Structures are given as structure tokens and as C-alpha cells.
Amino acid sequence: MTNDGFVPAPLTPPDPQAPQRIQRLRALGLGQPEREFDDFARNLADITGMPWAMVNFLDDGGQFFAGLYTGSTTQPGVSKPVSAREPGRWMPRDQGFCPHVVHRRRALVLDDVCAYPRFAGNPVVDQLGIRTYMGAPLIDDTGVTLGTVCVVGPEPRSWGQEGLTTIKTWAANLAARINQRQPRR
Image 1 (cartoon, helix red, strand yellow):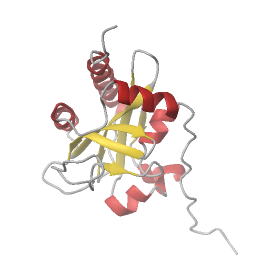
Image 2 (cartoon, one colour):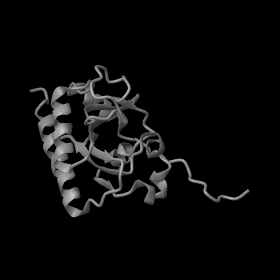
Image 3 (cartoon, rainbow, N blue to C red):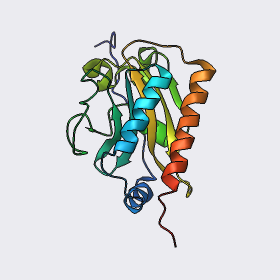
Image 4 (cartoon, rainbow, N blue to C red):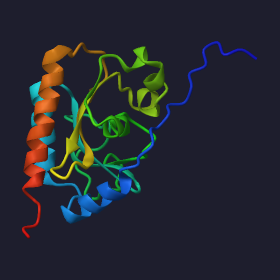
């Protein structure tokens, strides 16, 4: 038996911060789609010129997109779901690239996901046609990585330093806004 053409299944990184993240998401009231996050995703898509953008949080059930912008398309989800568990607002933890960003606690830029064997076999590549990804972590003021902001598209794209700076800046700005939700003691 040969390995010709064999692409290994993507390895989802461990998530040792999951219990703290779930506690923080609940304390901050983050668990459902929000118009503020949808608007943020739309603005992020506009500024990066990408068709799809998300504000993504990871909980014990997987990933949910509290903010989602899909332009005039239906991929990678639907534009107006009501629940975090509806199609387009939820994804298993072993799909997509955001769990890697959460684990790394730093931005991840994939100009062409197919150029990276670890990511080329991810189901979103074939099922949704994702070819480029750029995401950055949302780290709250307690040091917990709550999730990510990200953009994806169907064509490879060279992001360069400007793209990296953009996604990191937008993530830091949203994290600061999320930190303002902290209940007063």
C-alpha cells in the first residue's frame, strides 16, 4: 500500500483552556448571534475585501459564529440564522482553522490553504471551497482566548504584513469591546 495522493486528516490541537473559556463566555454573556458582531464581521469583510468574515467563539459543543457575514452567497453559512446551532452559525471543533488560532494564541495567515498539508485536508476546503484564511485570537483581559475573528475566501490571496497587521488590530479592538462587558464588582 502506498501513500501516493494521501492527505492526512487535519489534527485538531488540544484545548487545555476550554474550561476557563466556557466560564468566561458565560460570564460575558457570549453565546448567541449578535447584531454587533454581525456588523463587525461585515466591516471586517469590507476592509479586507473578502466575501466571508466571522466572529467565532469556541465552547464545549464546537465553534459558533456570534458574528457572521457571508455577502450575497450562502457559503460558508447562511446570512440570517437566529440560533447559534443553525446551519452557518455552528461548526464542529475539528473543522476550520480557528481552533488552531485559539490553541496558538496568535494570528494565522494562510495565503493558500492547499499549500499547507496540515490544513489542505480540512473539510472546509472541499465542502465549502475555502482557499484562503486569515484569523487572529480574541484574548480577554484575564488572558483567556475566547475565540477568533477571521476572514475566508474561495481564491488564494497573498496577505503580506498589511493583512496580518489588519487582522491583529481588528481582533484587539473587538477584544477591548468585549472586555467592557465585564460585570462591575
